[in-house]
Amino acid sequence: MIYVVRPGDTLGTIAAGLDIAPRLLIEQNGLEYPERLVPGQALAAFRPALTHTVNRGETLAAIAAAYGTDLRQLYRNNPQLSGLPALVPGQIVVVAYEEEPQYSMVVGGYSYSFAEIAPLRKELPYLSALFSFTYGFTENGELIPVEDGEMLRAAALMGTQAMLVLSPMNRAGAFSSELISRLVNDAAARNNLIEALAYEVQAKNYAGVDLDFEYVRREDADAYVAFVEQLAARLRPLGRIVSLDLAPKYSAAQRGLLYEGHDYAALGRAADLATLMTYEWGYTYGPPLAVAPIYEVLRVLAYGVSEIPPSKLLLGIANYGYDWTLPYQEGSAARSLSNPQAVDLAWRYGAEIVYDEDAQAPNFSYVTSEGVAHQVWFEDVRSLRAKLEAARNFGLKGVNFWTVNRPFPSGFMLMGREYVPEALP
Image (cartoon, rainbow, N blue to C red; front, top):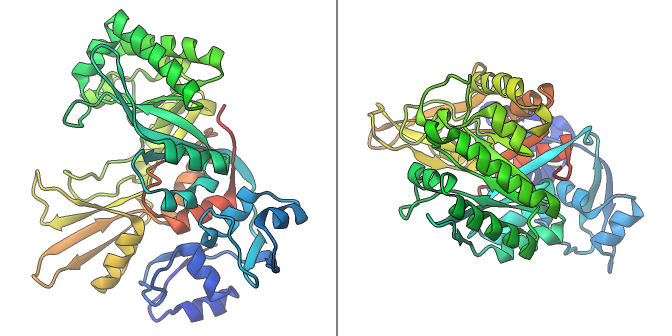
C-alpha cells in the first residue's frame, strides 16, 4: 500500500498503525534519516506474509531453494541486501509479502556507462534490461564505444539483459541532426556502422541495439526508417533486437524538430520495441511544471497505440525532478534532483508536499533564508503507480526508466510488489 504522511506522524506511529515493523518502512523507502518525515510524503508500506530468520552458515541461494523462490525475487523483497548475497545470523529475510506481483512486464532502465556499480546493484533485480548509455559514431560510421564492462558484468550476474544504446552526439555532447543526416544518407557509413554494431553486440553479449536518435530532420524521416530496417535485418538473424526512443507525439502532423523525423507507424513496423519518451514537459529551461503530467502521458499513449502495436511499446518513466527559482525567467536553468533529494529539500525548509490530482505528481514551494522563492516538482510512488496503471490499461509491453542512476527506493519497491520483470522479446 501507499501511506501519505500527516502532520505529527512519526515512523513509530505510522508503523504501529499499519502493523509493520519500523525497520521495514526504513528499508522499503530507503530512509537515511527516518526522523525526517514530511507532511504529504508518500511511503511504500508493505506487510510481509512470510519471513525467514537466517541461521549460521545459511546462504541466500539455499533460502531461495527451501521456499521455492529465486534469488532475484529475494533481492526484490529485501532492498537492504543491496543486490548482494551476504547474510548474517539472525537477519530477517522477507520471503513473500501480502501483496505479491500479479503481472509481468518488460522493465528497462537507462544507465550511464560510467555509473557507480554499488547503487546500481540495488536496481538490477527489478530490471529486465539495462540500457547502456551511450555509444556514439562518426560521420564515416565508425563506432565510438564506451567502457561499460563492469556494469555489464554486474547485470549478467543478476540475470539482467543489457542493451547497447547508440546516440548521435557531437563533440560537445549534444544531439546532432547533421550527424544523423550524414549517416542515414550515406550507404557506406551505414554499412560500416551496422557491421560494427553487429560485432559489438556479439562481443559483449548485448541483447540488441537501442537507437536514441533525437532531432531527426523531417527530410531525413524516410532514410532513418530505412536505416532501422537495415539494422534490424542484420541483427535479427543473430538473435538480437532493435529498439527505438520516440519523441512524445500527439499526432502524425505534429510540428517541431523533435517530432517531425519520427514516423511512428513506419518506425513501429521496422523495430522490435519502442520507448515513448513521456517526460520533460517540465524541463531544465522551461517554466515550473510536472516533469511527466499524466494528462500529457495519456495523450501520447493514445496516439502511440493508434500507430504502433502496444505489444511493441514501453512507457518512458522519469526518475527525477526539478527545482525552479521563482519568478521564472526565460532561459534560466532549474536544478535537477533525485526524488529522495526533493523530499529532503522539503524537510529542510519545512515545506508540505502537495499532490496535484490533475498532473498526478507531487510538488512543493519553499523560500530560502535569503528570501528567494522556489518551486519543486518530482515523482513519488503515487505518480509512478498512475503511470504503471496507464501502461497496463493501454496493454503496453512494459516501462523504461530514465535513469536508474538516481535512487528511487520506494518506487522500485512498488515495482517489485506489482510486477515480475519479463525478458525482452
